[in-house]
Amino acid sequence: MSRIFFYGLFMDPSLLRGKGLHPTLVGPAELPGYRLHIGNRASLVPSPDATVYGMLIELPDEEATALYSAPDVRDYAPDQVNAVLLSDRSVQPSLCYNLPADKLGDGTNAAYAEQLSALVLELGFPPAYANAITGRGDA
Image (cartoon, rainbow, N blue to C red; front, side, top):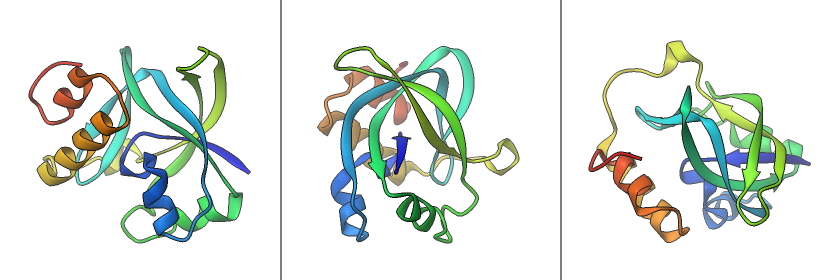
C-alpha cells in the first residue's frame, strides 16, 4: 500500500474510483516547501516559502503503478516527501508523483487550472489558494 500526496485532479477520490481504483482517504494535507506549477497538468516545484495543498490517499501499490502508466501521466515519477496532515498536524511520509523539471513545459492549461481551482474549493482548501491556481491572486 502506498500513501500518496495528490495535489492535482487525482486528489478527488471519486475520480480514482471511476478509474477502477480503490483509494482510502487519509485526509487533507499540505506540503511545505513546494509551489504548484500548471503546465498541461499540475506538477510541483521546490520553493522554500510556498505550500501546496492536497489529499493524502492510500492506494494499493499496483494501482499506483497502473495510474501513472497512462500515456498522459507516464512522465511523472515518485518522490519521497513529508506531508502534514491538516487534522492533527502530524508529519506523514508519503510519495508524491512529479514531473522532472525538464518536462514542465511552457504555458498554462487554463481549463485544467479552472477544474483544479473548483476542486480545491470543493475540498475546503483556502479560497486564496484556489484563486492563485487560476492566476487571480497570490497563495
